[in-house]
Image 1 (cartoon, rainbow, N blue to C red):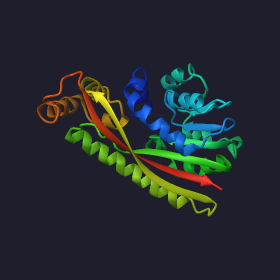
Image 2 (spheres, rainbow, N blue to C red):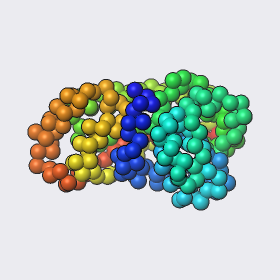
Image 3 (tube, rainbow, N blue to C red):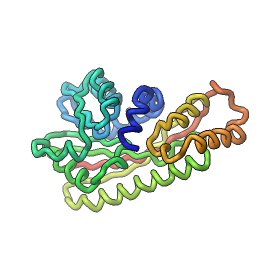
Image 4 (tube, rainbow, N blue to C red):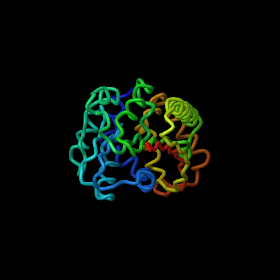
Length: 251
């Protein structure tokens, strides 16, 4: 689905991910140890909302490079403070030799499954970092919200892809000067039932495009007849998202 997916959800992307971003940004700030002078790249940056928040909250003096191939997403990123949108895939972006040793920090948040050539991308990311640089990759281990069976199956497959990517990247890091750390974070949050159903129907995550309209409708009926029977449309559903953060420090 790729770019078609992001074009189809760009208008609601920030709304759909609002609670997730609000929970995840403090974790990013904790892990990145950002300084005002740092030069940062966000790979798979979407609408640039995370870049803007980091720029504002950390007092950065240079805009964050927002690398994303979706025109619709980048149109929104251009309107934000502290962003420098780059309309390219990760592979295209890192193919430029001038990127070498350019960045103090590189982040990739839920984007690794879109890398067409992950080996090349990961190698290039490390090559793009300056001494003392940090690369952080964030993947979702469990969305946490009520999930119908077919969506859960798709989610589990996506989680497994993330696990395999982490194994791959660790194999690529043979440099003893690179310190690798991993940690899982639990992020409590809540959504209204009506918003959750809209997220499903609009396929807010690309993996949901594996399900057709009938399967989505059937899944929502499954939730209505099961765990969400007594939940009203505008009632909030509390849950805990689990994310995995892999951090690479170049000493």
